[in-house]
Structures are given as C-alpha cells and as structure tokens.
Image (tube, rainbow, N blue to C red; front, side):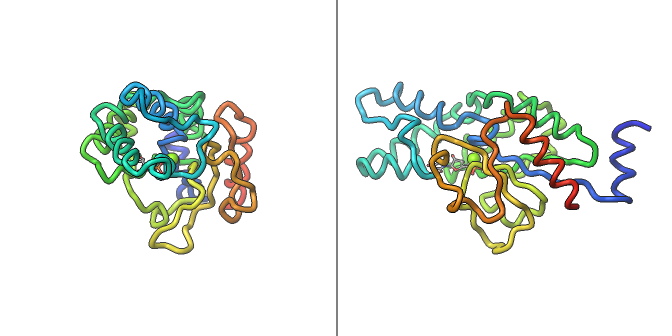
Length: 215
Ligand SMILES: O=c1ccn([C@@H]2O[C@H](COP(=O)(O)O)[C@@H](O)[C@H]2O)c(=O)[nH]1
Ligand SMILES: [Mg+2]
C-alpha cells in the first residue's frame, strides 16, 4: 500500500495529527533579514542588535527609540522583495518536509500577512513555492487570527497569540527567536513547550510523537 493510501486509510481509523507551522521567525529568518536591510537602507539611524530584541513587535521597539523609526521599519518590511528574499531558518525546510512525511501527520503553513499586504501576501506564496514546491500552495493558510484555525499543534514564535477564539484547539510549540528567548517559562502560553531549533530533531520528533499519542 502506498504512503498516501495508508494516510487515507488512517482517516477512517484514527485521524491525522494536524500541525500548523508559522513562517516568520520559524521557517524564514525575518528578524536577521530585517536588521540587515534596515542597516543598508538607513545606515545613519540607530539599530537594535538581535541580542537586544525584546517583544514580538520589532516596530514597537524601534518606535520606542524614536517615533518616526516605526514608519521607517514598516517601509522596509513592506518593500518589494522583503518577504520573497527571506533566507530559510537553518534546518527548517528539511524538518517540515520530514514531519509532513510522517505517517498520520498533516502539516499546514499558517502565517499572518502584514497589514501592508501588497507585496507580503504574494511573496509568502512565492517563498513556499520556491522552497517546498507548488503542491504546498494548497497547504498555506494566510490569517491574522490563528486562534480560529483548528489543529493539534501550532509551531510559532509569538508568545501572546490571541484572537476571536478564546480556547484555540491547538497547543502551542513556542519556537525560540531572538525576541522571545529571554521570556521566562511562566510567561509562555499555558501548556506550551519550547523548541529551540530545527536542528534539534530529537526534540521536535518527540513533540510530534507525544502529540500523536494524545489523539
Ligand atoms: O513588528 C512587527 C513584527 C512583525 N510584523 C508582522 O507580523 C506578521 C508576523 O507573522 P507571524 O505569522 O506571526 O509570524 C508578519 O506579517 C510580520 O511582518 C509586524 O507587523 N510588525
Ligand atoms: Mg512568526
């Protein structure tokens, strides 16, 4: 029996584990790339080193330095090519392909577009096609409210995800990023677990296997 037939058969037995995977700071190096492009575009403005980043919104941290820096950061983020040119995070592409090939597991890429969506939304699709192939476009969910998407796990760097659904169906895997690495575990979402890196395959495999057992 082929792997896809096995997966279909399992639907009638136990359901698949559904895993949502975020893009920015989880698959794509949003923070590193933003800092690089910021320094190129505004070499005479102050910058925030990755070690100094705190809080999800880089726009807020720059705005706290000087109000006009916020709109300048948004200008860099919303410029043509910013999202298309993001380099992948080390190990991410191989890890996601491997998770997706695991029996009884289905993966969707769940990502929030910028409000300045003109380049961002299209370029996120281009990025997925480039690194995963055309078939994966059917697995892309663009939403600014991840709480309403039904799944078992959400792998995401943001530690304060809220939305219309007060009790999301998923449990969060907090992916470590420069802005959350100092966040103490008591401030992480309830029942969440941390994943430091895609290179730590023992940990992500364990997280997936544990979640499968709970189905
Ligand atoms: O300061 C910031 C940092 C990020 N954004 C945008 O938010 C989303 C993040 O998407 P996730 O799916 O939560 O990773 C992305 O479009 C960033 O550009 C922001 O607006 N301001
Ligand atoms: Mg993210």
